[in-house]
Amino acid sequence: MRELQEIQLEDSELNLKPTYEKAPRIFEVIFREIGNAIVGQKEMIRQIIIAMLCEGHVLVESNPGLGKTLTISTISQIMSMKFSRIQCTPDLMPADITGTDIIEEDERGSKRFRFKQGPVFANIVLADEINRASPKTQSALLEAMQEKQVTVASTTYPLDRPFFILATQNPIEMEGTYTLPEAQLDRFLMKIRLGYPDSEEEFEIVNRYAEAFRPSVQRCIEKNTFLELQQITRRIPISNKLKKYAIDIVNQTRNMPEMIEAGASPRASIALILCAKANSFLDGRGYVEKEDIDSMAHPVLRHRIVLSFDAARNNITSDKIIEKILEGRKTII
Image 1 (cartoon, rainbow, N blue to C red):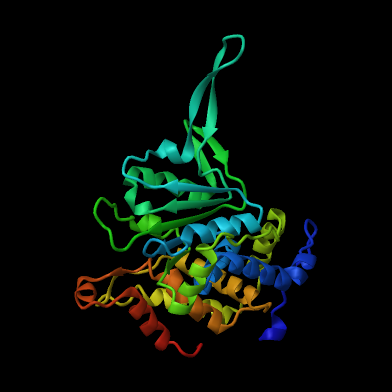
Image 2 (spheres, one colour):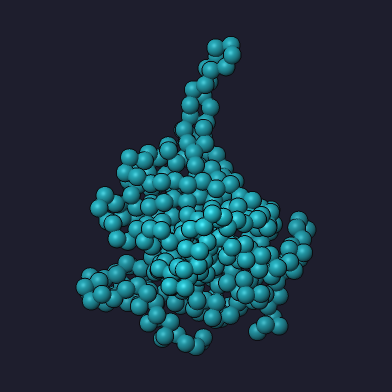
């Protein structure tokens, strides 16, 4: 199967071969520089890079103080990308995110409207505690996430590429929060669950950040190079058997009424295949294997499954259901 899978990197408009050949070294430097600032959390960092390669967005669920803001701001520094942070609160308005038209007066006294960009006009956006924003404000992000543009007063403004949103939510404090609707959850490529560091990692964190000199990172990749890596990711070949395997996993979430009230949409099939391509790319392979799909199934599907009442009552989680689906498909038909 490997002999039949050839990645096409040259066309009449763009030659991606030089970037593809440098990719292993680029990824090595990226992870090394992030590691200079972040201790542990390797799986989260890897999945964030995968989502960025797939031009997707990530929802992170974790307790406060686990390095989410530091991680995403560090990535923006090493990739020469504009970073902005939105602290979501119940009184946050849509215009506080997208921007609004303001009246300005020139030296002759003439007045005119000028669009003032909101924090969503950045390459990397952190939406902190997104479930604390009202549904009206949450919906202001939908067009930006899906269409990579913002419409204000009938005028559409394109967002700079690459564009990536990392949204966080706290699983403990639920007072004064608004549950994200399924339509919005489906627009996140992945949902990452983040746990506490172990004792050795926490000791290293204290050593780094309780001293006089804080760790620093250096820029190691240009924005245009990362855009080329995104294009290469989509060109990673995958066999039809593996495509059908990924689709079958997603389809199974729609055929378990005893556990799942609503399964994943076709957007999940696209996401699973794209993430598998990015995972193989990070591993230095020019083709997708079954293990790439299996490793991406949990973060891609866990937020796209609506549990039935019986499943929730019996403490059956979406991760357990996904594990059961994968166990039933150990081989590719």
